[in-house]
Length: 298
Image (tube, rainbow, N blue to C red):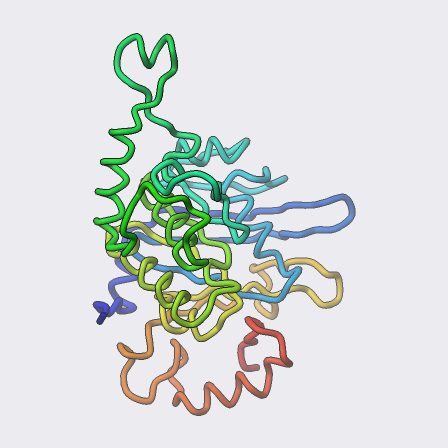
């Protein structure tokens, strides 16, 4: 499937959906985030990459309500918000797909899609007896999966009968079904084969095509270059083991435009205006065997 190109001009003109300014998060004597800034625009896939311990997880936890930052502010559609828990983020329309797959294997696909958001029957059966409206949940599950073109035959089959890629698609579809502002995905293709990984990437594109911006955390650089519209590089402070202050030029995180290879001008690498072969040579020479650690040229 061919994707419509997301040009730099389009990304720049798109309205801001989420912003973070000066986020600071400390765990005792360790500073995980030190003045982090963040911007997410409508209709884009923003990949967040970096070494382990650089602060990626702390940033995403702050944006999804899993942790409360010690300093800084988060804005959603220009309005300042403060999440005290992931439930607050859910109410604001922010959904997160975690790496460990929060699905119940013994339950059906339809039941998993509405896990924690079950629909009750109308009238006394729902209000008094708390009986579930399984028929309506099944109908809506079929409609939502068809909208995202997920090729699963029956919504009544147990999730444990699905492949790893199909299970991940169920988790992504659930997030897309209830998200109104942002979908956050933490290593969605980890531990998946090539075919299943491509299945999940195609689903992520469809989520973006619905107009939902996506934050993608990944160490799989081929997947990042293939699917991301922009890329944010979080760099750890090697001297202090902290996330770097973006206000210091020598340590500023590298955020640059990134489009799929098929839509870049011939011979142009990801947002750096250099030939692809030179970009790949630098990646091989400076990756040091750590996936996702692509340092900007000095």
